[in-house]
Image 1 (cartoon, helix red, strand yellow):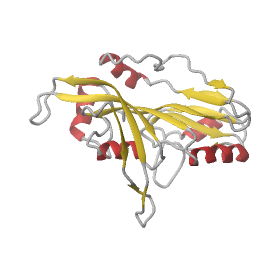
Image 2 (cartoon, helix red, strand yellow; image 1 turned 180 degrees about the vertical axis):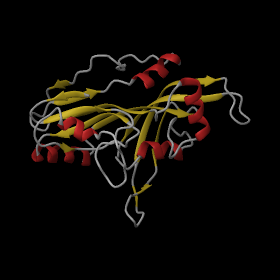
Image 3 (spheres, one colour; image 1 turned 45 degrees about the vertical axis):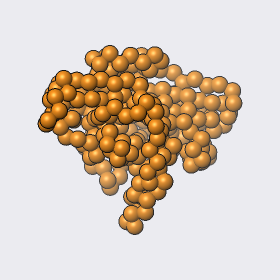
Image 4 (spheres, rainbow, N blue to C red; image 1 turned 180 degrees about the horizontal axis):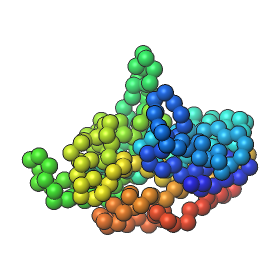
Amino acid sequence: MILFQDEHLVVVDKPAGMPVHRSRMVACDDAYLIDVVREQVPGALHLIHRLDRATSGVVLIGRNAEVAGVLGRQFMARDVEKTYLAVCRGWPDETGEIDYPLPGVREDGERKPALTRWRRLHTIEVPIAINRYPQQRYALVEVSPETGRYRQIRRHFAHARHPLVGDTSHGRTEHNRLYKQYYGVHRLLLHAWRLAFAHPVTGERVEVSAPLDAEFAGLLQRFEWTLEGVPRHGDDVSAETTAA
């Protein structure tokens, strides 16, 4: 689960289905990510950002308040590079962006600016009928959210009429069922793949990648979606650092 750590920070790989921490919005009888990390890393831990429960991948944690403040300001300034992998319904354009304000979680429902960019990596058409369509189209996309709104990627792709496979809140039930029945996929196909940022103390660039789990990686193999440089389940994963 730990991808990288030093005396200042920890980077971990969150499994799909595991909540990051306790909250009134999430009820869970199983483990929370922050508690699992505390069993392995002594001392104070400060979550710098969050992934929703259904999403897997890279999560950054500071080991003291000062480091957490520096990293938090990098996120606020949009100096952190976030890259996700997702499978969506349909074939979006090869590249594009969704610039669509999203309602906040506050009671006033204020909409906040939200920008998501994507690059289409692979497509497939499967001969399985749904409703009046004898075949279904899907795509693997690399996604770079410029902002960090609540469920931004999921909500943006649903808004663009390319909902993510496995999304039980914003997706399509019939397509989620297809993936369960024919491909054994029971999770949201959204993975926080890479995170790149300036080390809060040394200033060196740190880039960390999280491997795809067996379910996600197995689907890529079945669809023959081979990606050079994409870490697969069981691969060795290490953080790269370079001088700023």
